[in-house]
Image 1: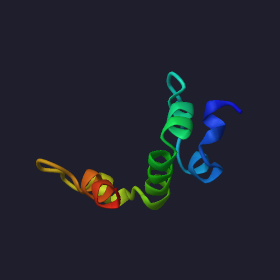
Image 2: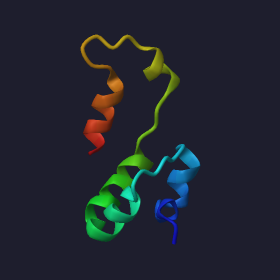
Image 3: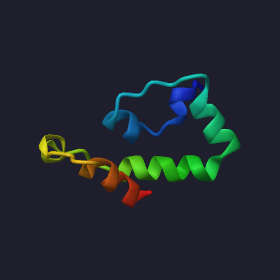
Image 4: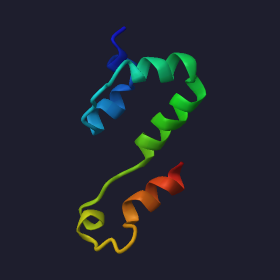
Length: 70
């Protein structure tokens, strides 16, 4: 199986995937629980237009939202 194919289809449909140095394979095989956690977080996260347009100050809502999911 190609490394990018290890990433669930639902995630590949939501995001543009760039795989580097077999990272997906390393995560999926050597760290399966962490890989699942990361996949679950990516499936839960939604980036909205309002989040993009909002002023960030020291930190925008985007990383705060993602941190809360993790």
